Image 1 (spheres, rainbow, N blue to C red):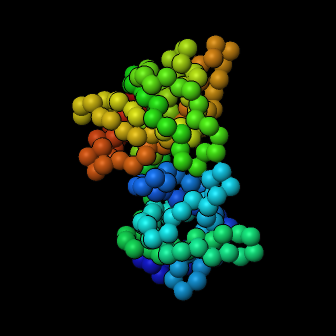
Image 2: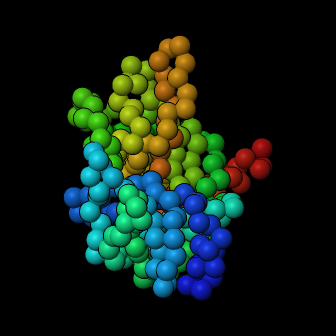
Length: 229
């Protein structure tokens, strides 16, 4: 997608949800935002706040993901500064690289059953509450579906307290190409039965080209195996 097509898409998507991904610095993390305005080839998005203070993002490279009308567009940008519309802080960003329309099949979830290990790292940087007291130890999870966007996994009984929404985790898993370590962000806890077993939805926190290829091959193998049953 070129910039002209991207801005045409954005002009019809004012008010849509935006995800800001900062992969470096003290404010690294994933932040929720929204598309507010367009001006002179610049994109105005709601600047995130943390503990009532604006998260500083001026002059750094970010990735924004805009979802509208069933489409998901990902673009690398550089932030150019902040202005205020009344009391609303608007972060202005400018596209600087390839703009990608993410294929829907990238987020098709394929059922599987894989045992893996997980380690709590920290809470995402946009969380205002104090960090939970989670033991610094590896614990077992069971991955029950996977896509190129993330996994769903059940935590072993007795370790439910290790699951915290917007917690960042390190995953050790083998998709068939050897043991890999992948950063995860816990987006939701969507199942909790009477035994205290939790099922969590995790997003991958950025895959290398090698990891993307290994997981993509695994997803395709599982997809073909399901069709051949």
